[in-house]
Image (cartoon, rainbow over all chains, first blue to last red; front, side, top):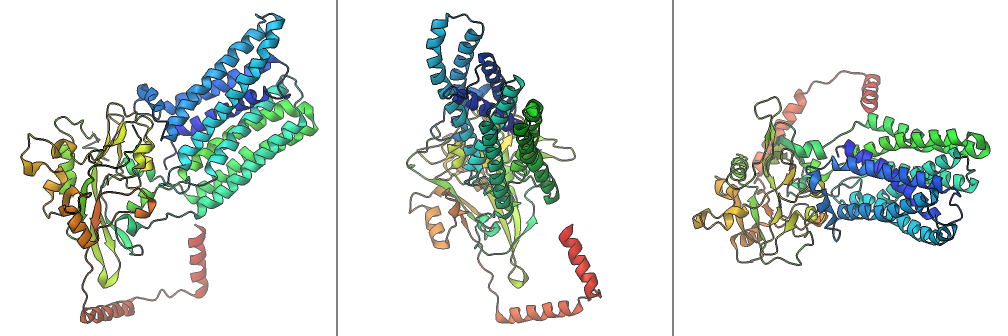
Amino acid sequence: MSPAYSIIFFTVFSGAGYGLLAIVGLTTLTSLLPDSTLLNLIMLILSLLLISVGLLFSTTHLGHPERAWRAMSQWKTSWLSREGLLALITYVPALLLCVIWTAMVIQSFSPQSINELENYVALIGGVCGLCAISTVFCTGQIYASLKTIPAWNYFLTTPIFFLLSIVSGLLLWIFFNSVFSYKVNNFVVLFSVFMLEAAFLLKCVYWNFVDQVKFSVTKAEAIGLEKNTIVQNLEPAHQTQNYLMREMGYNVARKHALKLRWFASWAAFIIPGICLLVGVTHSSYMPINSFIASLCLIAGLIAERWLFFAEAKHVITLYY
Amino acid sequence: MTDLPSGTDKKLGLLIDLDICVGCHGCVTSCKEWNSTDDNLPLSDFDSYGEAPDGIFLNRVHGYETDDGISSQTVHFPRSCLHCEQPECVTVCPTGASYKRQEDGIVLVNPETCIGCKLCSWACPYGAREYDHKQGIMKKCTLCVDRIYNEELEEEDRKPACVLACPTSARLFGDFSDPQSDVSILSEKRGGVALMDNLGYKPVNRYLPPRKKHITSEQNSKNNANLQRFSDLKPSNGNSKLENFFSWLDQKLS
């Protein structure tokens, strides 16, 4: 499949945004919520920025972006529609939380009403976290549900999308907490490293699967002949490349794919893991280490996402 | 709505005979002509007279060669929308622009509501949908829905343009839900094939496989003798075992 930059940036940036939003939202239910409302507000705004930038990128992929609102309508059958709808719904609790925290930061409420509001914060935050998580789940399902692309139609596709989004969120969360001089609970850091390496493990299993996956049909069956008939191309249907070949016939050389896998492994999974572990033992390095970890992760994920598209073969390539 | 109808009243579709298709591309050009004129939005062309001309077609004809040796055959394979009973191109559509008609089972795209997200073309295993980037929407075979019910045309002309154009009558149009229709009877008799059936899209269109060549034992032995003569003529490459090993290694590593 052709690796379209609009979709790569959308899934990486919005994925990180939804991950951060999910962490910020869900921590309101726990004792891990940072005491500083200002810090929470900043992380919330950053996650919304990441999400919005990603969504804007994704609309550049459309032939008619001005009709994008129509994509909310077919949630009964279409994972893309569900993703679009949930992306929109997520803004409601997120913006509500934004308003409440802003009000708390500029202290426009009496201390008594702030106490009352805090109950609502946990409720809205929880809903916000669930919406963010569900959106990422739908993103994964868009790809995982396509039977035409066996490399994506795999049980690990959605869990990997999901884990990578959460891990991006966790790393950004650790970075902001440490920059604002809040000591991040070591348990949270170790949990993040665990999630990161779990994602790495699943990605390795996925790459191994992609190397071996074959179509469940043969070229002969694609043109209506008996399964094992030898079929060779004789006359092309057209002399120059068409939409199908450009969009679905993208072919990446194995050599380049291996180099990129190597880069993605180090940048997205190994270096951030080491940075965080060093941060646990030397907490004064945590701000810079978590910053490097987050940057490396994003760079690595862009390579990982590029490969996700470039290495996936569509069944229509049997015709060419 | 992208909800599929629980069943369709008719199953209109094409029966394509791979045994007699000569690969003339007549169906391709007549399809393009009809679907680019009158009330239809044109099927856009790009760089028509340049280095790499490109354009949208709803029907393409591929040429293949099957088997090798004496049983080898040329197969011309026209490829267009099969108007599946389980069209995932419809269910993945986020806007409802793609839909399957309850009355005749035709799969269509509404050009007014398509947002051009291209997901339907990813979901189709047959490459039936092409994206028109001049108009920003997806294009596909309509089974000439504007011909087959068109009362301004003579009755014998109320067929898809590709069917009318075919000089060898390799394309037949009809209702597959009616066991007495020409297409159903012929498909039954000749073992009509639903392409890549195991993927589960339940295509309506059927392809009649090419008849096998009848090869006599005399032809066969003659052919084998010829093959033997050619293989005797093949020069040996004269390389040592070590050289062969290195060239094998080179191939594997590069």
